[in-house]
Image (cartoon, rainbow, N blue to C red):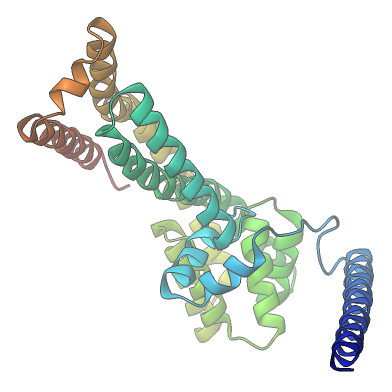
Length: 314
């Protein structure tokens, strides 16, 4: 009798579990269908871009955004304009670090694995800085056209808020994206000072600060926005040409900064290819490991010094 009761209880629990599993699958399928219907409806109205990409690693992304590191990483990614979430970038960075770690161990010596991994993490964040600076440079080159459009719109009698929305529609990225954010913030009730201030914080540059200051002061004091923007357009055009000339003159120096560490790594590969196992024997003692670490630090110092000496603010 007891065995019969145990069989009956087990059968009942199994059936109940199956019922819950079927209900859960039905709820999951219904939720996916509702989400897809919502995405299709918003895409058709233009409120979200068509073909919205499905995000990877959503659980890790949510947990990472809850941390201070994740929030700072999210701000850096927003400044670059990349369509990557903090969770996706973190996973890609870990994969790069692991790959370089294994590659350094296989090609050079086991001692170089952690060094290659650290270089991979540094290169990932340097890539973000490069993308951010690249976007800032492109945005700076669009500032004269932006000032010209705002001047023409205000001269035609449009309000500055309307002129910003019109400029967002006529210009290309990244100016269109940033002005679109400003226009959306203004539509939600944000002040012009705060909206333009956040744009200047996302893309810091002297030219944008001057443009934002001109717009804010003209909006507060009720001055001649058209005349100020006309004069600013000419100034921005001159600064644009000056920045291009300076960048051309310093291109060779910047290439030297990257060539110095590349030559160091190349010498290690050449040494290991000439005499197989030379790096293993060199890094097999604490003295050799210390010499390698000091050499890498000197290469890093040389790279930073050359970059700093070739930096000219225009």
